[in-house]
Amino acid sequence: MSIAALFSTDQQLPDHYLHMDEIEMKKRITDIKQQMGDRLFIPGHHYQKDEVIQFADARGDSLQLAQVSANQHAQYIVFCGVHFMAETADILTGKQQKVILPDMRAGCSMADMADDQQTMEAWEQLTSYFGDTLLPLTYVNSTAAIKAFVGKHGGATVTSSNAKKMVKWALAQKQRLLFLPDQHLGRNTAVELGISLKQMAVWDPIAKKLEYDGNRENIRIVLWKGHCSVHENFTTENIEQVRQHHRNMKIIVHPECTYEVVQQADLAGSTKYIIETIQNAPAGSEWAIGTEMNLVNRIIKQHPDKHIISLNPFMCPCLTMNRIDLPHLLWTLEELQRDHVPNQIIVDENIAENAKLALDRMLAQS
Ligand code: 13P
Ligand code: SF4
Image 1 (cartoon, rainbow, N blue to C red):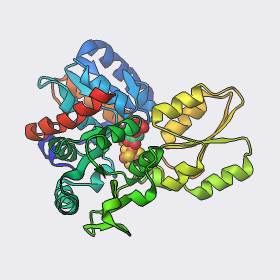
Image 2: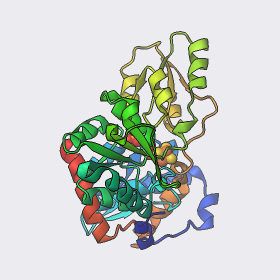
Image 3: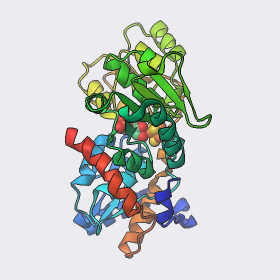
């Protein structure tokens, strides 16, 4: 959990919500939303469960949710997503607005793979090798403290839908990049821009060392050794199986998948890109999707005219995204109605100021 989380009030769901009837919960949420009107705004990420996403006022990928949060005036923003997304919303909204995460256990294992101490150590080591030729970029799937580090050193955040543009932007300023914390998105994006694997090194934050064979002068991208534990479960064996059993099936994956999987897939892009590609595909087309299961199942339901499967038949949903459920959403809203704010996300002001620099640089390019 990030430093910023220490400033938030972590509260648990009272037991009786767990035994409540589903229809009753849905009715209560609908009524509260109506009563609170413009004072309440619920953004929902595409990976949220159906029972939750149906109540979202805006649903989107990480970039869209950052953009809607930045333009939001509601007093309460109840974020249906994970911790780093709620932090971003807090950074981009005004002081009088309150951002709430219905369950504080909704973290992200990838974001937890880079902490500020590790990042400072890496920076010290890498700048001793490369001097002032390095710019940091961080995937939004990172803590506010990492965004602040990046903002302070002239860098920016990126999402899966603007990574190519942001890496290009960064390389126009400095010779080299440190890309945190997802090595796969960093590698896949750099390859798309024509940078060869030989020009990429990996920084291991546990061993505190640079993994690279050859002359360091040739390095253009230093990839942080982090990954998404959900997307790493898509493999080239899954791709072989699909190619063998479904000759006409197209494979579309999220760029958090490994380089090998992205190379062998037909298409790769953010959750928004995946949704739109399937929407625009002709009836009767066949698709294997490599991303989180709540979203894949929703796409399957929404397109009965197409044959759609998960690239990995044994995939599970993202467990931390799944922490946000109907009982937590209802409890949060009922607390707000009683003028009590549970699980507010408050990013420390100094961290927020520098993190906003990194986010604003991205939003200006998007
Ligand atoms: P996007 O929705 O931006 O593609 O991100 C996916 C993700 O992993 C969010 O945690
Ligand atoms: Fe984090 Fe992966 Fe879950 Fe996204 S899908 S929230 S990157 S663990």
